[in-house]
Length: 175
Length: 137
Image (tube, rainbow over all chains, first blue to last red; front, top):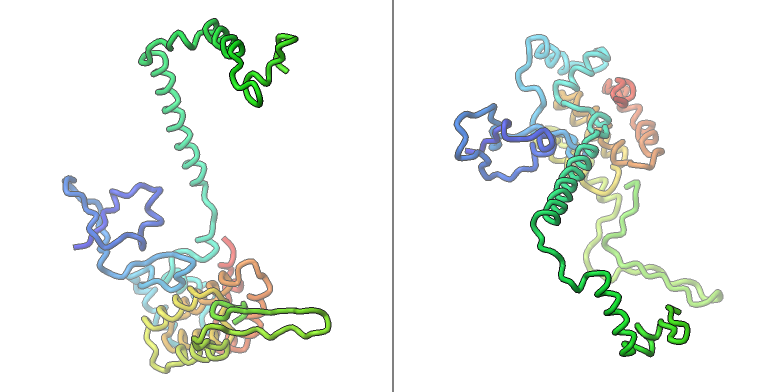
């Protein structure tokens, strides 16, 4: 049986999941109670700009008033009032195209959470530097590095185009 | 269609110099290319089916909207008439929203479409999304 448990979906996923999920079962084996289940073997409603007419109407169970409006829809549409036409639209569809296209603030959440995780990683890296890594080798000391540099210049490392070529031996400074 | 499609033909235009006229474009593929008129006629016929059912209307519209073009007014008209036969006003309004969406940044297309469809809209009593006030949030 194909079921989708809505309790399992976070708010960030819910809107885009309805039509996009594959037909494999998504029910987790371990949970003990089930929230409202969507039968994914049945036609589903979806608001998409590229699927203007979804597989089923938005509202299934129509009240008596809505049913009588449906009856009136069978007659000439010029007899319907503007409100009735809007009601018929809302019975068949959830969101209008402009409502679908509304921008949301979701990106702020995404960027924010991403930065939070980066921040946490940064804290972890700093903590590691303080509490985990051993002392750096003595070759990293300022004094050692200076002596190393002098040694390279003394042995004329890359004297033509590279390292020692940039050192002015007469003046004793970098060119 | 109201947007050009050049997906099938390799188009070659060669200008040698000012005294010689340019060569005409040629299709090197031997595939039979459907003309715009044939495409339009095919879709008008599809929606004109007298006993078209709900599924066929949905399938047709969703497929049509999937193409990289804005349907000609005559195709939209036959789809709206199919909605009338199926007593579905909501879908008729939805179709108008969808073709407006298809026009994208080309803002002149939708008013042209509505202008061409005005007689049909009046005859069938279909209100545009603008008239219903659902074209804004």
